[in-house]
Image 1 (cartoon, rainbow over the protein chains, first blue to last red):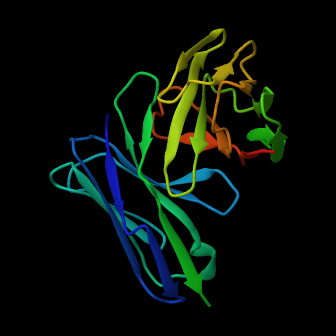
Image 2: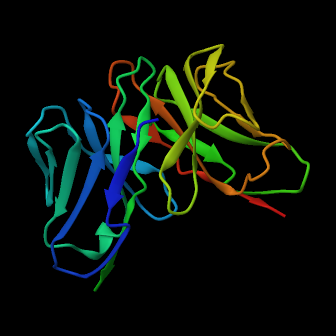
Length: 112
Length: 113
């Protein structure tokens, strides 16, 4: 099946620091997504990427769709305590039923 | 407010018991999904339904069953055949045509006694 490798698995940072995480796949995909899950809640879509090489921002978040269509990066600038949570890279599998395949997640902890 | 609700927040199951997790949405979405989340892993698809009275197995359907008698509701039953049911269960729904945007409920944490 489709596999996503997301890294790092966890990060412990100080408030104000920048954060980077990435995701690679064994296959080419046309849509890459980044979701965030707050503790004890369901994931929420942060950014959607549709074109190879695309760079998209959402506030302090910036994500890029790799030129090979096999990878994606998410950067968070000037982290704040509410950035705490699990960040998932996700691929939309091109099926008719809207299948999403999730990476293992990056657990982010921000120390005030 | 529109959204997805799941109940209960926590559920305890005894060995050999079936339990049913509730999922309701008032977003008028056709498609609904059930995922399982284990620590250190991403979400895995259990079942999905694209329309009322139709549902299909996902990647890890063994030991689970669902029904879709109403558009708003997609309950998941964890049967006694599921040998490792302790997990966080998430329900989601999707608007037609927006493949990437699944809206998730707050989840139900199932624990086996």
